[in-house]
Length: 365
Image (cartoon, rainbow, N blue to C red; front, side, top):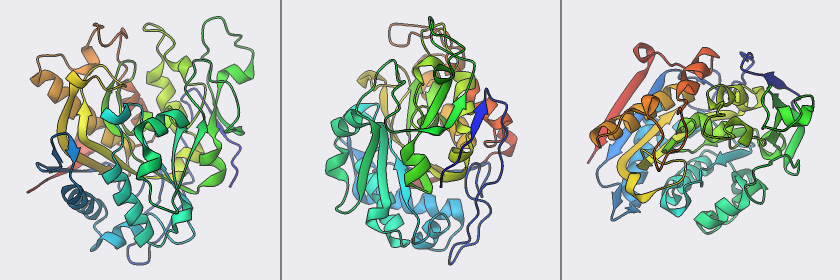
């Protein structure tokens, strides 16, 4: 389905989400914020990682608990049928920016693929993807994906210009009065971030699989930023320099695109390993074993809870919270703009108010 839509500088509120009733579980509207606005399920398992290696059985138990508690479904397959049905083409947006040290892990990814297949989605209708090929291959996704499941990307590698259109849809974009120094504001192409064709033309539903991480310019990179900077091009303009930083408005403006709001049906945050400083890469001294996974259809509520977890780790390590942190040798931006989460809430992308967030925590043995 081709959508010729754009959103201007954070003013779009969006509506018209698709709806689906599963074979054994009835839901509200799919998309963002989805059938469970404000609900976040956090599942911790002390045995989920041992000597830096994810443990398959604990991860399997965490995934099952998270999906059942999020949906209220009686069984694993029923939980997945809330979101998908046979005939769907489902994209899984991974997060490989942290390299092998800190990326969406194979054990989590393959459990998602298992759930989709058991719910009736054919292997060839599952597409694991990222914007950049080189990031995916460096992590080893090509070796993790089972036979029949596809993987793809929008362009070969990261570059600071990011204006090439191969892999991007010229009809679907976010237009914002924001350019890099020296560019011409009158040039429409420079003001726009175009959506990846994988999202606009190849899939009809998307599962967002971010990692729990600090980010120098955005403060954190969890569900919202894995979409805003992973689903469109021309994103470097959002944080051109440590002082020319507009992530606070850029992130919610991109996620407000109708094609993203409608197709992003589920967010599963891999927080078994996480980072609390020096992001978005993975500096080993700031990576810790959080041993927790988060489940939501509401990316705002999920990111608010994720920010709390990162802030708690920072405070325990003798640092300030992200919002009031200042530049140091490992994080160079003047202000980490965590306000993107609150603004996303104001735009109707989810629930930001702590009093309205329904956080359910579970510890598994």
